[in-house]
Image 1 (cartoon, rainbow, N blue to C red):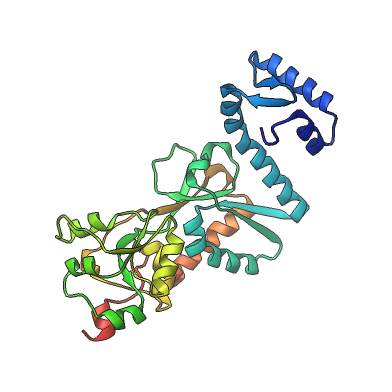
Image 2: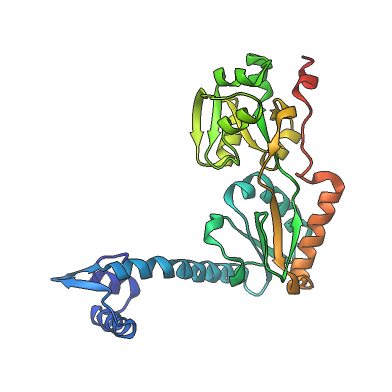
Length: 297
């Protein structure tokens, strides 16, 4: 599928083209269907081959990732964590670095893939960070809190634009749209009492992390989850607009198998994260003050 020819595949696998042909024929005999049409010196995948490759490619990727992890850490104990990309970049990685520094004998591996690519029941990871969901029996969870959605602006851009008097004024200001955002601008404005809104967008991103970083840089006003923006708000890089109109966003849980809670590496991480949240570094607390208080408006 990758190379398009038996000869190229043989070269990549460091075996003969004849061996590739024999293995392919054996697989086709086992499956009872043709995977490739042979034409002259080229082979062309059938519809069945495309379907089959799509299903098994994830398994090969997992094998490659597991092999790389073992090669890297050897016999050291490893904690594997799954986390969607934006949550990892904006919330998890800072905390994982702190945990790793406090647990030098444990290697922490974070996998940042689309949440659609992961299945809880295959046990690929030790712990998972996923949107809150109904789970079957046998799992435990730690809530990261109830996320809120509201507009966010950098102090520099705020000073230049001024605090808008009403939500509808946002339609005339530079805004950033994140495809990953838990809510569209139009939906949020409708909840704030603005109907038939048409936004003056200056930037569209398919990544929440990119959108928030663009807002921090002063490129526009972003509508995002308080979970993703918590650190930026705590650091004074972003402040919320119209917090009185904030809406419920997508909340996340840390998930692990109940029967594995007593494993030392999982127990250490769960207990550590719980303590951090109790000490006040919990992103479930909406960071930042009312912007009118900050600017004296």
